[in-house]
Image 1 (tube, rainbow, N blue to C red):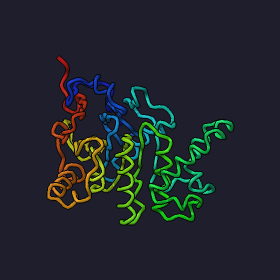
Image 2: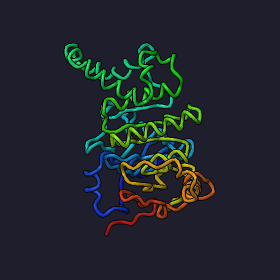
Image 3: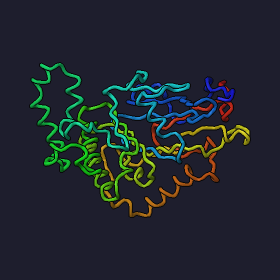
Image 4: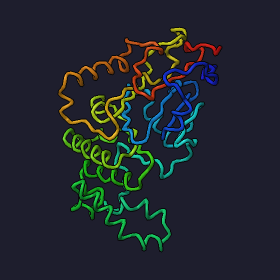
Length: 320
């Protein structure tokens, strides 16, 4: 990474007891750097997420949102730093981490119901599947009924609309009861009407299940409406590095806001309020405006679990 020293952390700010925060979180990310050759994408990411949170993640194009999601999923490895799920280092992708992509990740040769059941069937011996098939099928049909998809359970993906396919993909991910559900711009390919329907559908399921969700989106309004917590990554900030080094820095968490309590979804009417409009403006300035660069010590981090680590080159102080 251009000779940059990243291994020594000198200062931690934002929490009284970092170890207690780490053990109480379902997902803990600390001192994470990710580079491809000399191209630094993520530059000291610190983030701790509690069980049941709906964490919506935004940021400028190319800031590393999807890269961070892939690190959590286990598709990629950090250059340095740690990503912990329930206190253990992230390994290869497994059933503890559900995933919903922008494109409808359904098996084209399986009907909607069979797509939902496939994960369970794959993990079972034939005799186990035979014993539980009826029970699991009934549970899957409950999900399809709630999604308004009961009459489409026998259809193949190509026979479904985009919104219908994405509903099946969300049910497929939720049906395995992962510890955390990762969503990578899941609604961006939908038209506005279908997108709003999917937002409401997901929030209803989340309110009921209290599942932990890590939701990446390029739509700032969607993030502010959906999340109990809004995290913005950005490469537009300043620290103690020489201005000539600005092109070599990667994205940090520049905004980490507590929006509402866990389990409390926002009403659609919140989007029409002046407070919501001001929130959008503030985040757009802090994270998306290349001409506005907050110093690393002035980031908008008001979430109770926000913390950040500073190395000496970022303005951190040597321990006394």
